[in-house]
Image 1 (cartoon, rainbow, N blue to C red):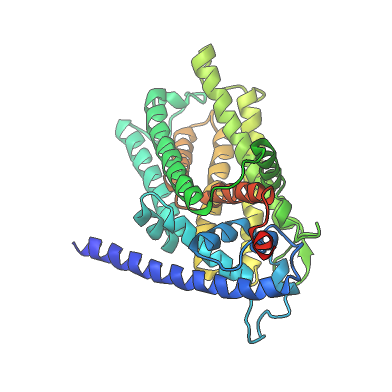
Image 2 (image 1 turned 90 degrees about the vertical axis):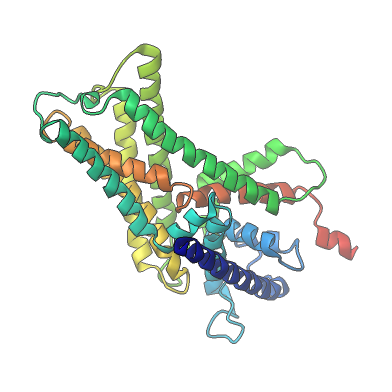
Length: 386
């Protein structure tokens, strides 16, 4: 009963914070709509000009359209210490954090992760790793010679496929429910448009991280008013490293089920090459993003989101680090231990995907698609003035 009361209190507090954040977005964007100096900086400002007032759905939409490049903060004549106190990147970051909770399924999980993202990610991962280590030790020694990389001699393939497949499947379902809820709230009916053009534009914007260019292609502001492209570069390392690892897993799955080729695969086999390239990307990208996160100006970020951000970065980094270590020492007696630790971090990622920073990519793609669609429709503000 006490746990339920605590969750209800947290939900009530989150609702009050969301209302305050939405009200602040509405205040700031009225000022921005009157000024429009930053209109060419990113997609947020053209989208803003299609509205005269900003409700909760608008706040969530624009918050996820924002990439927090912070160019507008340093260009704004009304930024702190001005009495208007216009700090759009930080305000939209707070609403983005609210998005991960508001649309999480179930919502209580999103609230727990928001408050203790790093601790939850590490606790889940290390807890699963400890359980797997204990399972190996019950069977005998943790250090076993002569396995020659035979992972399935430690954990049977079907057990791994069912367990990790179920965890990943749950995450996909939870994310899908969240993004459908998000899309239903932010979208509205309108004249039909060539949807394939809008999808193509949104995909290009997402895959190239167009809006991490600061509106001029020179990059983001991270610590001060100097521009840097490193945030975009480290995001690319992270995203494409993740996709290469996903491709490696997909190819290995095809090998196993279609061609009856079981792991371990040779060093120059396609699954290993893809996984190694992806693993290197997921070392460089998350390490770089963590370094930038530590140095970022507090004016630009919501302090309470740092734990969520760092939890996701840490999971990707340790998955890659332990995966590469497992590849390097898979034919030694250390293989069972390394396998258990690696699988622990993989399970930690799978179980927290819908509630951590990974979700921001899904919501941002939805926001980019909405922006591409509404660009192709008449501006309702201009139509109303006519």
